[in-house]
Length: 181
Image 1 (tube, rainbow, N blue to C red):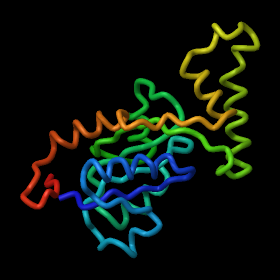
Image 2 (image 1 turned 90 degrees about the horizontal axis):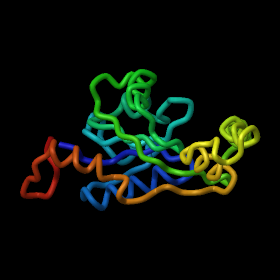
Image 3 (image 1 turned 90 degrees about the vertical axis):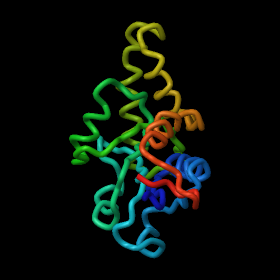
Image 4 (image 1 turned 120 degrees about the vertical axis):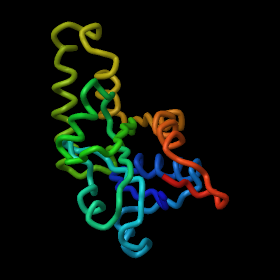
C-alpha cells in the first residue's frame, strides 16, 4: 500500500507537483530531507525528483530507506522518444514505472554553477536562430530558451493525468480511502 509521496525539489516545481498529487490521492507529501523523521523505513512511496544530467536527484538516498513503487521526474525539457528509457538506464530503475512532468526554471533559486550550465544550454539551443532565424528552432527548444532567460513554469494539473491513469489502474481503494497496490 502506497503511504506517501516523497520529493526532492530544487526550485519548487517538483514540490508543487507533489502537493497537487498529494491532494488528488489523499496521501501526505514530504521533502526527502525529512523522510527519516517522518516515516518508518521500508514504507511504500511514490518518489518525485528533479532531473539534472539524466540523474534523478535524491533517488539513491530514498531507495536505501523506502520502498519506491513509482518514480515521477520533473525537468525543463519536452520529453522525447526514448527519454524514459534513458532515465531507467542512468538511474538503475529496473522495472519501476517512471513518469516525466515538465517543470520550469526559477533563475533566482539556482546556484551560480547551475546558471552557467543553463546559459551554455540556452546558447546551444539558440544557435540555429543565429544561422537561420526563428523558423530554424523547434517550438520546444524555443520554450526552453525562453524559460532559461525568463524563469517560466510549465506546471499544470493536467500534466499529472498520465500518472493518475496508471495509478488508478494499479490500485483499489479500501474503506479507509487509502490506495492498495
